[in-house]
Amino acid sequence: MTTLSYLITQLDLQSCTQLRRDINYRCGPRPSTSYNTTAYLMNRDITHRHAVATPSSTAHVLNTHLPNQKRRVAQLRTKNFCAQYVQNGRKLVVSSQDEKIRFYCRNPEKSKYRSRYYQCNELRVDQCNWSILDTAVNQDGNLIAYSTWKDAVYIGRLDEQNHPQNADGQQNITWFPIEWNADAGQNQYAVFCCRFSDNSEQIVCGTSEYSIHVFDVEQRRRIRTIVNAHEDDVNSVCFAELGSNLIYSAGDDGLVKVWDKRAWSDGDVIPVGVFAGHRDGVTYVDSRQDERYLLSNSKDQTIKVWDLRKFSGREGVEATRACVQSQKWDYRWQPAPPGLCQAVSGDTSVMTLRGHSVLHTLVRAKFSPEKTGRRYIYTGCARGEVVVYDIVSGTVSRRLKGHQAVVRECDWHPEENEIVSSSWDGVTTVWTWDERAENNIAPFDTPYQFGDEDSCDELYQPIKKHQNRKRKTVAQRNQQCSSSTPFANFD
Image (cartoon, rainbow, N blue to C red; front, side, top):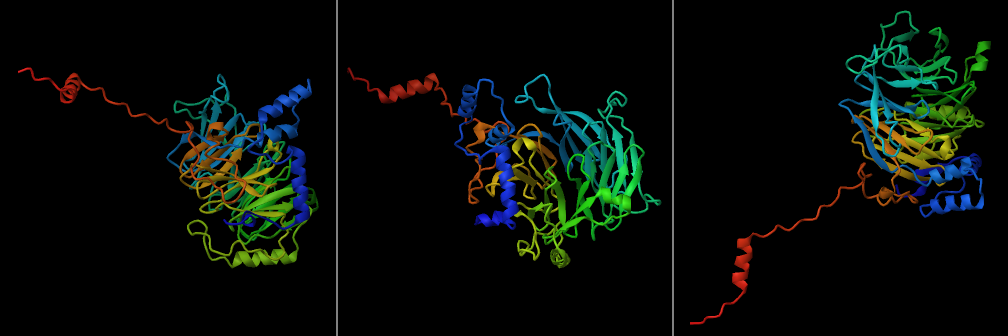
C-alpha cells in the first residue's frame, strides 16, 4: 500500500461528503493523538456547572481512545465462526465448529476494567453438519437461533430457570427446527446467515439454494420464500433498521439487493433496488441503521459503502455479472489474483475501502456503533487481524494483530470501546484501550504507518529482569585480597 487512494476511493463525491458531514455532526471533528481529554472534561465541567455530556462529545472522547490492547477470553481446540455481544453488551456469545455455543460474562462484583470474561453458559446444538455457520440472539436475549449445513433454522429459548445446567455445565435447551423442504434431510443445502426482526416475531435467512426465507418464530412456519433471490449463494441478509420493512441481501453473484416486505402482500417479490460494483462474490452486508447507508464486504478484497438513494443501473449489473463469471479462482484455498481492484463500469458505490484480506471463509465487516457516531468500519481479516477504517479521514485507524488464523467475525460493544474477535485459531479475544500500549499502536495518520510491533498482550510488556551479581564466597574474596595486596618481607 503506497498511496492513500489504495486505502479508500471516493466514487460518489456528493454522497461521500454528506456521509462525512453526518459523522462530524454526530461526533465532532477528527480525533487527534494530542487531544487532551482531561482538559476537555475539566473545561466542560467548569464552564457549565450542570453540564451533561452530549452524544457528540461522548463520541469525540471515545474516538480518541480506540481499542489497542488484547485480552484473551478463551482458547479452544476448534475453529470459532461467530462472536457477538448480546443483551446490550452484558453477554458475549461465541459459536464454534465443535457444535457448541458458549456464553461469556464479566464478574459483576469487580469493576469492568479489572474483571475478566468467564464462561457462564454452554449450549450443545442438536444438528450440525461441518460447523455452526451463524448464530443470532434477539434483542430481549430470550431467543437464540443457529444455522448449519442443513435446510433448516433451529430456534431455542434461553430460560435458565426452566432449563438448568447439567453436570457438564451445559444447559439443557430444546431446539425447534423450522424446515422448508418436504424431503428434509435429503439434501445438503446450507443457511449461511439468519437474523431476528426487532420485535422477535420473524427471522430471515439466506441459503445456498439462492433463496431467501422469512419465518414466523412463534408459529414456527414459513411466511415467504423468495426463490432465486440471487444467481448464486445468498451469503448474508439483514434488516435495514429497527422496525424497518426493508431487507438487504448479498450473494456470490456480486450483487447487493434491497427488498421491501410491504410489496409482498401484492405478490411482488422483485427487489426494489440493486447495488452493483464488486468484481466477485459478496460475503457480508451490514446496515448503518439509518435507512440510508449500508456496506458490503467482498471476495474482491474491498468494502463498498452504498447510498440507498442511488441504485445501480442495468449497465452496472451486467458489468458486475460479467466480472464475477470471469473469476477462475477459489478464495477458500487460493490467493487473490491481481486485477481485483480495478473499477467496474456502472459502479454507484459511495466509497471503496481496501487494506484487508478476504480469504478462506465469509469474512464479515460492520459499522461501528452509535456511541462512536458510526464513524468507523471494522472487519476481520485472513491475516489474523481486525482492521478499523476511518470513514472521515480515509485511513486505517487500527490494525489489531494477535491471531494466528483468519478472523471471521468481530463485534464492537454497543456501549463501550471494546471489540471482540473470534478466529479459526480457536482464540476469542477482547480488545480494549490501554494508555500503556499507545506507544506500540498509535492511530495511523498515513498509510505508510502500520506499526513495527504486534499489539501487546494483556500485561502490556514482560518486565525486564536485571541480572543480579552473584555474591562472592569468603574464599573468593580472600583469594582476591591475597593476589592484590603485597606483603613485606621482614627476613
